[in-house]
Image (cartoon, rainbow, N blue to C red; front, top):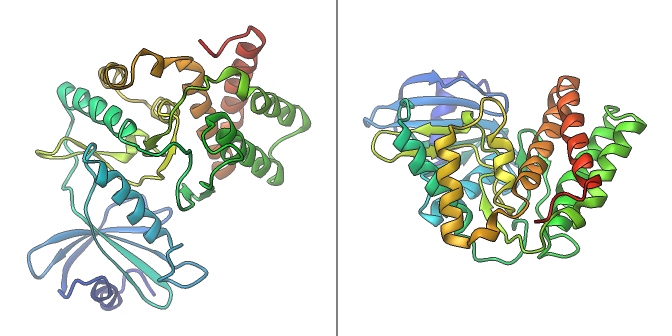
Amino acid sequence: MSRGDGRQLELLLRESGIDSKVVESNSCGGGCIADVRRLRLADGRTVIAKISPGSRLGPNHPESRAHEEAADLAAIATTRTVPVPEVIGIGASADDVILVLEDLGESKRPSNSDWIDFGNRLAELHASNGTQEFGLGHDNHLGDTVQENSPASDPASWSAFLSERRLGPMRRRLQEAGLLDSIDSELFERVDEALGSILPGSIRPGLLHGDLWSGNVHSTQGRGIAVIDPAVFHGDPLFELGMMRLFGGFPSACESAYFDRLVEIDGADALDASETRIELGRLHHLMNHWLLFGPNYGHASRQVASNLVSMISRGGGVG
């Protein structure tokens, strides 16, 4: 459909369970994956609508991006830790899928206490998981990259999951795209091959947002800092901080509160080899940006990988 077509929009809304006319429709910006709009409805409600193409297997197939996001938001909501927008409904036409979400309102400027609260809640999210396996019951997307979440050869090993489902596939995608030369390939392979020796065996899986940069937080009135656009899976909690430190990062008060609360919940060994674990998360996200947005991210990816290789050669990591 033409995504500016009000009549088609109302038909999609009806399919999602909303039988109300659209009084006003405003773009919320972004929109590289979905057309995101704030809708004011005739019944007085405002909602956020995300319109995207349906799955190749059909718009109502659970592999659609809308169904993925709804499942990811529900996974976080179930923990009752970090706020997320409520999923109101999903509707589909022959070509498009609409995900209707609670409108969190305009994002306000967070205070220092808001960031401390968010750090505490994020640690609680990461500690809320009851599974012993890394991964997730469904695949999802990191930006436009398919994120494989099936268990690794050793389901309880973070180093196996990181190699087989994150860094290894990302390296192969970069090779297939013609973005890696032989020197790059060897560098990233060295990191991959050393994971078992540089990562503690005690890392337990936590539920991660998966794509937590500053653009995916939303400071609400009365509910604290919420998160949007997740790509959840059960992974190393500190892997999350690799993305959090990119693109402007999060305030130091947030990170300090996070570390303090994580240690309070899981003990001091929750931070073993912390900088190595965070840098591996940063490397993964930089490689994904290299794949999606081109060679401007190549230098930063190589630099992080080189630093990790230097750490490996010094015997760093576990400890």
